[in-house]
Length: 362
Image 1 (tube, rainbow, N blue to C red):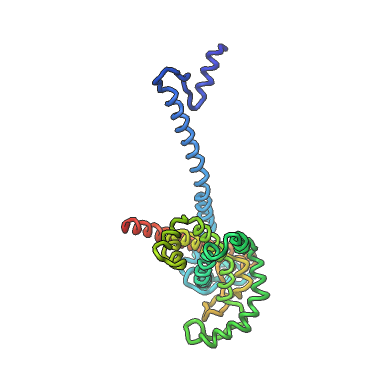
Image 2: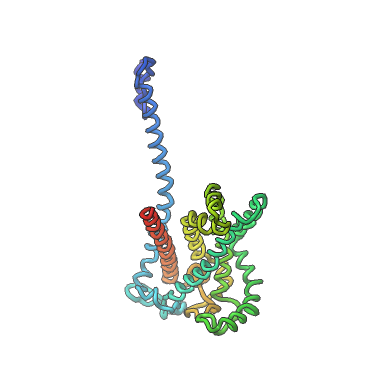
């Protein structure tokens, strides 16, 4: 083949080709070639990043679709009462399956998870109620109240808490926290705070709602602290100097200047902490008491959360020959996933309107 033809074919395969650079003054071809190469590179980079970014959203959609398809027979069987009943019963494992609403189940089987929804939401709210102020205070201390030379070491200790496996937290709660709470703190709280709603009544043995909330608090505080500390440290030094030059104290500088500037970071870290608390499994299972079919009467009552309940009931559900128990557990997982998506979406909407309000006021 002629060399010129081969060269022309090879050039035709290239995505972008340029003519030879014209060295004459005022020639535009070299500039146009560079612009063409740059635009082609930018488009390729955008496609690559769009592909990588869509993998995360695609994974979430795939999980929701899988849970919906797998749990659909249970959704058809249970209906809306699945969310408002407190009766989870696998039925007689030795009985002959019966047909209900076109689905085969064991005789006496009922599935209701209101007690799981309440236990999950209450334990998460308790954890956030304690963890957010503690996380803010710790982050402010690490960013503003500690010598710079000691800051990396203390920050490392806080971040190390996030690396501890959840089963270790659960074992610590079982061995140390439950005896202390059941024998000392819970009776003290019931004696002096019993006049408050939800704080009176029987204190139990230490397993319960508050215990699960405290363990979750220890697990999510490092996440809030580390994220907020990095945001505070990254604030411009000029903000601190200007505030102090206007006569603000160090506390007023942090409260009125630095913390408002990292409000979005605080909300974002709280969202991540909420997701961690909603989905925590082993640690909660070991300290919550694994209650079944009743709502908590006070803050000391044993509970179950949706994530821990799936783990604790999976072995029993696998004994159901109809498979409906496992599909009902998948429906529990679907409800938990939808709650997490709703909480994150609500927080994003609040951030969006907060940003628009700030723009209007400026």
